[in-house]
Amino acid sequence: MLRHAPGSVRDSIVEFLSTTESASLHEIHHAVGARLGTVAASSVRSYLNLNVPDLFERVGRGSYRLAGRADDHLVAPQPPSARHGLATLHHADCFEWLRAQPSRSIQAVVTDPPYGLVEYTSKEQGKLRDGRGGIWRIPPSYDGHQRSPLPRFTVLTEDDRAVLRLFFLDFGRMLARVVVPGANVVVASNPLLAHVVASAMSEAGLEMRGYVTRLVMTMRGGDRPKNAHGEFPDVSVLPRSMSEPWVVLRTPLEGRVQDNLRRWRTGGFRRPSVERPFGDVIRSHPTPVTEKRIAPHPSLKPQGFLRQIVRAVLPMGEGMVLDPFAGSGSTLAAANAVGYNSIGVEKDPAYVDLANRSIPLLEKVPVRDGDLG
Ligand SMILES: C[S@@+](CC[C@H](N)C(=O)[O-])C[C@H]1O[C@@H](n2cnc3c(N)ncnc32)[C@H](O)[C@@H]1O
Image 1 (cartoon, protein in one colour):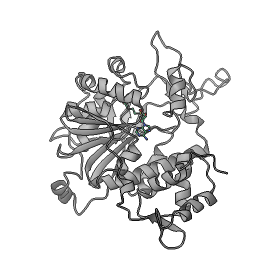
Image 2 (cartoon, rainbow, N blue to C red):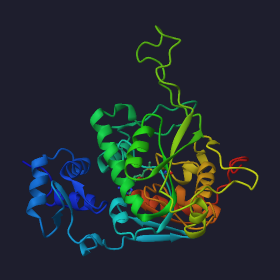
Image 3 (tube, rainbow, N blue to C red):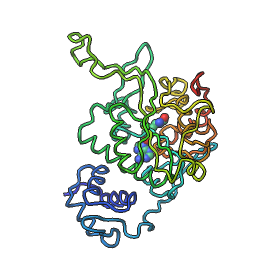
Image 4 (spheres, protein in one colour):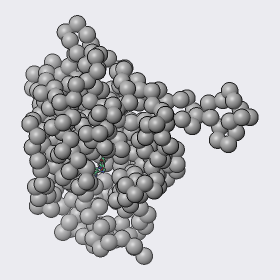
């Protein structure tokens, strides 16, 4: 028996099939599971068959696609949006938003997605806002400073990781359609999950180009054996994190690099100066308190780092940068600071309000010496 809201299985199937030409029952079943939790494969098959030929078409054995792929049901109403200089922020679910975008309309993506998948649900955000924790570990204050809450990625199970993989597979497929050839897609990650992002998004059709390492010494303790510090004083359980990997992908080029640079304004990174290449290690620091006061978002990234990444992703300094998980709007603020057009999408109304207040302030914060190298 299905325990899901009426229409949710059908909507999930439509949402998934709109990202791809066609898919097997197995792929569709996984994609629906990633959105709704456990759903029996037989139920997904029934939904598909019940809606052939009105909504779905059968293409070959066990594969389906949307009937008349460019139909009305793919066109979402325009979401509410706000302009801040060169930036536009939309209040929407980015999957819905991406589905409604024209193909080949974005030149670069810089984003910091949710990782636990549940940490940005209303339930977990409610617990965080009430100081109750949940998936968010609220660290004790240190030297009189209140430290930011951190999601507990180490609690992810094998199943959670499988769901995460499908989330990034889906996300990669959606992005691959809306970005132009040769577009850079740079995704914030962490040492425990970067490989999942890299492999799922490569499977979605993006090319893996490496990692940019943000060198950052965070105050994340807990590297010692739990409840056995004294007995094993020389042991670190994990390499103590001093860096944050940002996964770098690119949509396949059309022709040579120079052809893409001319036609699409993509195909490389903008150098910090004519003499200096864009490097894959960026010295950074925890997000400064001044920025956190402006934008108290639990995952706020610092302007000093973001401005370097955002500036680099458009090799000619021309085009549109997208952040589909905009949070406090820090990527959009960085884009304004370096003079680029940008679009952000955020689904939580509280963070949309925060971003609308924060972007005009964050874009003006001075960054430390060397931050723009
Ligand atoms: C890791 S945070 C990004 C924080 C951002 N880097 C900053 O500096 O403020 C991820 C954000 O994505 C939002 N989000 C999660 N799922 C989303 C979706 N499907 N569409 C749009 N936003 C989403 C969350 O509400 C959260 O604000």
